[in-house]
Length: 354
Ligand code: H2U
Ligand code: ZN
Image (cartoon, rainbow, N blue to C red; front, side, top):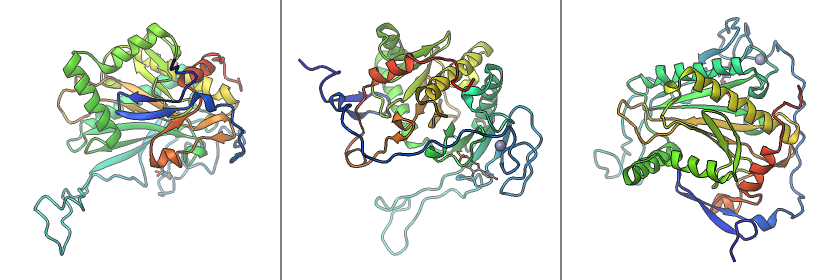
């Protein structure tokens, strides 16, 4: 009899329509691969060499204000620019239609990138900030979503945080980024299509239905409050990947009432605290919100959520890489989402450094 706990199987991600291979029988194999040292954790409250600390000069030459809560600026090395001329690439020397060549196709992309400093304190992380301070960050995200989404050339606003050198974060100062784009990026376009199709067929929100199942089964829930639920999704790829889902079906942070914004801050703090407590380290991850497109039309299928992708596997020194079969064929995991949820659930919500 096939069992999810004992037998290799593939799970389906209904948001991205991707498959993932799960190998639960493999968790006891020996590890002789790369061992990494966790970064030393002692950080000063203020670092004179940090380009995000209040009053310091950035690499671009501008000096930061002496901010006391949050601070937003346009990325000095932005990946997207607002004044890029619109157009499609017409390769020279070969026959191409006016709209471009099907095999050498490219089109321009406008946008803008911003950096959000979460706190003036260089030594903090989301897990160690107060719920009040985190609520202020949620408000700033909403302001930014509103402002950037209203720009005529912006069709989507991606809010995210890269935390930890392992994830490629350039600086330990608590900060996130916002990239606003003209078109829907690949992963968001996939989720957009899945949610629209689901609404068209069932008349309901895909994530509301999924959330109802998870709340009933209680197999993969990590933590919960009045307005948000954190769950290791059935189709999780990363070992301790989680999905934070709004309990109310709404498409953007801007729609959240003050109590819901505070609840989002609360669940972010509790979830990231559990992560840090898991391996007694400042847990690396990429975290980001998926919200409705900002192209000016209604998107009733969109259901606000956040994905958290931590790379750590079984200790602070062993990380997962997407290589071999995963790079060439499809993603794979050993520890099951149910086991990961159970481990996260069993941890304290009091930060180990407190
Ligand atoms: P990450 O730590 O996630 O890389 O984000 C930091 C961003 O800050 C990065 O995108 C920008 C980098 O371009 N940055 C500035 O805009 N000004 C600076 O002086 C240094 C870094
Ligand atoms: Zn700093």
